[in-house]
Length: 516
Image (cartoon, rainbow, N blue to C red):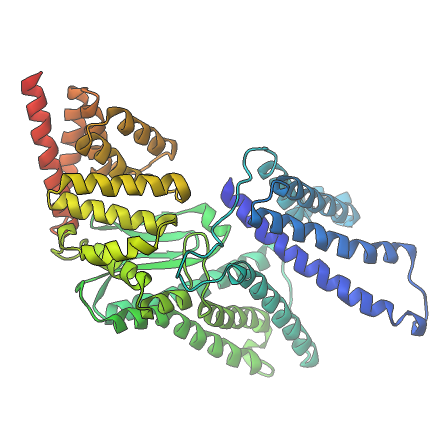
């Protein structure tokens, strides 16, 4: 539900821009009334007065939500209600609604009504609106709170302005767009946006392959390819349509590779987007008189999106889960903790494709980064990397302390983590600390996330949890299921570490069976 509210918030921001922009032009138009042939009607005056009011409502809805204000729920409901009312009004005024109501619901007015109803459902509960801190910069991460919020509004405004210019350009060149249907046009625009994202991510992936890295994940909107347990898997995630974006994850075959390779890989995405945008721009501008002149609108849409993506991605900013390419480049170039963080994450990724193990991590770099990065998921990941380093070296006390530090960060600022990140806490509480109550608490937290992957990590966590509660037959059964899976994993450092942990837990199960 939170993903829906986030999506609606961006829709409110777009609505605020559109209505306030229309209100501005309306004010400018009022200045010309003395020269006009006819004065405005009462209806047109009412519409002019409603424009800034609607812009204000949508603006307050997105601002209060982003700021975590207690009034966010109320403004969200008001803005969603406005969408529903506008959608109903437009549908009623559409003659097709009266003559053929079934087909009328295939137009944009019905979509606006649907967005309004979705907003009323999403904002109805009193306990769902929480402060969205994802736009707040972390210390030293090269981003700014204002930029983090404004970048999407600026991008939307830039896109609207560019497409307005393209329409005027098309009129001056006698170009028209033959609209077949709303759904057809919407589907076409979604495909072009997915293509733009795919080209950008392809730039990252191609550069990584050239520079000796292994591709581990390739995500384009709802289309997700990931390496799971050494094998490629494809998933279609419908929620990816709510905020079409992409991601590329790679693992280095050399954990000590030069820094410039990482910078080149990150910069390749905007460079390829820029080249694609320039190509689309050339085809659009040369469309008049050529066979592709009827496709000027898709070409202009694609070129505008690609060029905006190239430029905006080089601006340092942060979303809820990702950093822009510009922010990542600055972090890599900085001599401080964020460069150490990237080195630590690079080493962790290398364990999936090389013999490099957690015990080979540069713990000094991890500790330096941890001393400065103390909030958010990056801080949580750093503590978990430290815990895996100490556990792989047999330093149990240090591993317990690192897990305790990670748990503190979880409670303070990183409680929204995926199900798989609960596993180190479950295993640590059960195996390292012999804390059955703590292991059960973390197990229940993971189950609340509805984990769908019952892999080797899942089964070792379940086995350790059951062992801590002295439920030995169930623990043994879970261990056997996980051990069958872990033995099939590739020969790489991370998976060898998993096999060692299964061996350690097996000894505890055998000792408990003898003692019992």
